[in-house]
Image (cartoon, rainbow, N blue to C red):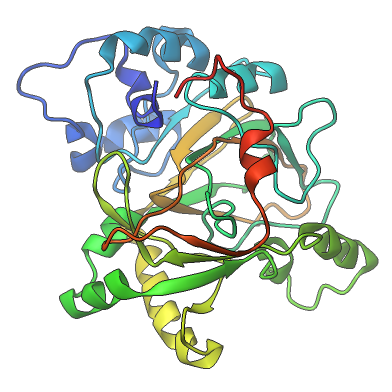
Length: 341
């Protein structure tokens, strides 16, 4: 089962009618369903259906095998309320859609769960409140991310996602043509976790930066990649971008600002209000996200698994280039012959 098919798991329990086109519910935006499920809307191509069909995310994935022909080309992610998963069952769920990466190229995993990145914000001052796509500093960024809510504050701590396909498609024509030709340098030396807290020079922050950059990764990606399953064109930007290839940082800054601001326009976004047990699975190839840090030191803990992705390909067919850092172990160490592919 490919990652494309998880985007329809919530509809696994009923066949599509002849009148429905792939992605119709995503294109029109099922706002009422989103409100019932706790989201703020579906304009960014999200399908918010509350509990997944069959009473659980894993059961929904199993049921959906009968509906592999449905291609939800405009859907970018699926949130599910109240799932009874732990780290083990979260990984089992992930393997139904591909092989998990290790938790992170440089950051240690949850003890005993090498695929799980434990993001416990009650134990650290780190925050992910900068727009980013997960792990774009490697040559093969994750295909998708699966985030599970463990502890959620009584207020705040939402996550916002942006649709980078819609963002690219709605650029002015001249800017869209420029973006299609540009390449950008991505690196973990630009740390979205620490950089979001300007002036954080505590011992904890310095140690965190040292771990995050213990191996420096630098990769050149096209600013616009062609989605390998839908053929759509998506912007590849976010917090790990340092500059455009062949441009100075100074020359890059203003154009990057314009493109990134377009990605995060409200019309391109959806906001999810977390509750314990929620699971969100999103297409990392067509989104950026931002964790809102408005919970005033309250406990917030989420756990993430990412799936092995492919090498992004530009509009002219060229693949991303690794400049430094080897992502082989990150992308192959946990693969099993039984993983979906």
